Amino acid sequence: MTMPKLLREGLARLLLVVTLLLPAVGCGRETPGPGKASVARDPAELSVALLPDEAAAKVIQDNQGLKVFLEQQLGKSIKLHVLINYAAMIESVRAKNIDLAYFGPLSYCLAKAKCDIDCFAAKKKDGQTTYRSILIANKDAGIKDLADLKGKKMGFGDVASTSSHLLPKYTLFQRAGLREKRDYQENFLGKHDVVAINVQAGNVDAGGLNEFIYAGMVERGKLDPSKLVVLGYSEPWPEYPWAYQNDLAPELREKIRKAFLELKDPAILKPLKADGFAAMTDRDYDVIRRAAKELDINLGELEK
Image 1: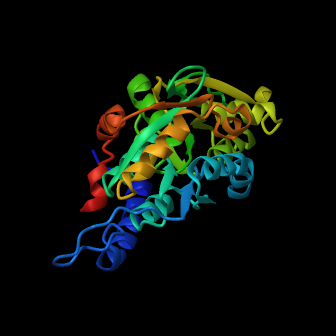
Image 2: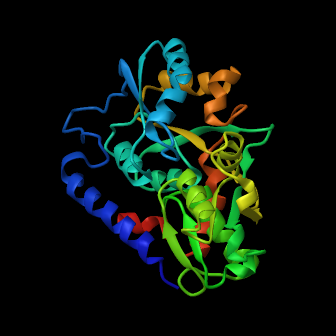
């Protein structure tokens, strides 16, 4: 089986950028010369990347409370960033332009394969550190279950998205035996909210996105559920992780970890769609790597 064309092209573009940058930055770290030891970083300002799942201006505005909280807890200036997509986010982490990042599970695995980072905490919602994708269809498309998606147009978000690409695609494969190109047409639309809007408008027949983003759009009146059919949900998967650069000073990394694990303010947590954060390790995301392998999404492809 071969990697989906759009995914393959997206990874190829990212590889080109990486190849051009490697001679200058490697993984963003200067290689110590003879007699020169590597020094742990303790910058006065930390660059923090948030998920590129929704409009950047909204994400940054909604997370001003997080910015203030981290500044108070860490004693440092915090600059929030929302990159245009996951590929740009991963490359910014690789180039050391980002110190701390809130990833989707798949984008974390992609970044981990390329850079010296580690996750330390994951989102907790309703007491759980797992979440699901929701699969929806346009009501007028005549789709009642997953098997009906054969021959239809399926909408996904970013190629590196977990809940708007990997999980819905894996669910279609596991439960209905459907594969992209052979059984349905895949369309990458960039963001979760764009997927939902295009399903409702009938531009694609069905789509997959994070269940919490879907619920939030319905609650805010951005979606009309009477125009949609809920086809089902994926199995629970490990939640969105926070990860930091491993060349940050150990004391700083511990302060960051502690700050997130002790974060309880509902006003700060609401934009992150979280009740809090729980400790997680890289091993918790091996299930994502196994699912990607089953779908012929080779995480190591970025390094070849």
